[in-house]
Length: 467
Image (tube, rainbow, N blue to C red; front, side, top):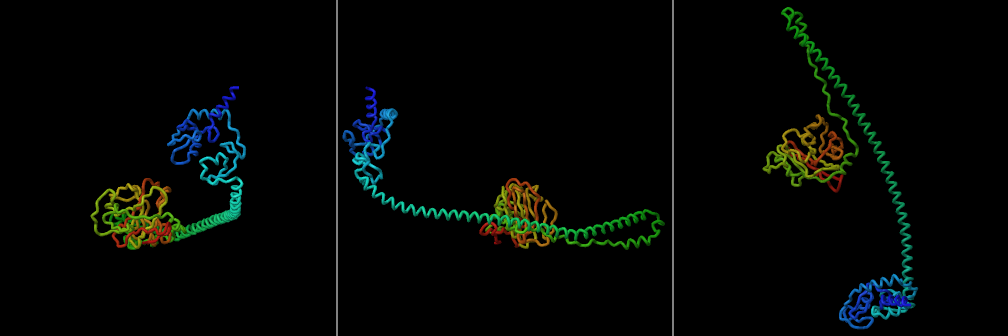
């Protein structure tokens, strides 16, 4: 019979006198009694002492609570041997007494022991039925408000679903618009391409026979002249009788020789390569750009806003450095390109000559030879009535542009020049594998009051004006 007594004693020793449950984080007071840390903390709710022991009422001037780890292990053993039985509904879990009151401050049910504890002395504690009647009225008002909220939520949900469906229809309609418009544009571009190729073929058929006729006529004249020259050379080798034999006829044929110059055929192509809307599309890749004065040749004069450059007649006293172009009349833009697509426009006005393009950042800026791609330069030179590039032959031009657009696609190795006025292609470099950092290059070449001016970007990409 000793075993049940030992078990009961273990349960009793492992039970807190306040919550009547197994100890949780037990602590010991100065008088030697043990309680759960949370239980004694609630019991000693006042900020200042003295503090009375709930069991023996001995006063302690300070909150001296020492952890009791052996007792915590004992409580854990008792909990394993005798798990706490489920608390019936309506019974306090701490004191195993009926729940008969309600705390309005903490909004929880209380038993008689809970109600008598110091923790609830200043709280609004009422009987169950009185508190239930009061809270029932509040809950009914809350239910009315929540039902209204539910109606609004269902209405908003229906509107949201309707909006989603409408949005999907709008997106689908716009998707069809995009597909239709781009398909139409592709057809228009194909038609435009065919028309341009047809015009170019017609122009070729119109001019090429005249050029070939000129060439054939010159071949005939050259052959006749060659025969006459050979005859005269042979006659000069003959003795006097042979030389003078039929000399009148020879002299007449010499006098009759008249070289017919070839017909003058204009070499400027009337058909230009112009893709509708291309320049407007390229303007999406515009960015603000300024000139770098540290790279400018001493003969170049830059505007205060670093947007314009012209070649002056006086060499300025500027410090020499590897970054400065000299003797080449060039200046670089501040922008540096290592990837992506870039587009900028330069107002050239009525200048007789200029050079624009890009170069590698590490080029020799003291270069005196040809600025070619082999030396890290990709530039287009305008010389009065034609374009020239070290990579291409002369390109005659009928109507020089007043504004030039330059487009660089770094990854595709693409560099092209356009007339920003009418969108026609001026020049395109062969596909190039760019590497390293590229920078825009500007050169006014000769002295002129008309500067080269970088067109400003106004508002955003594609919206640009000339300063």
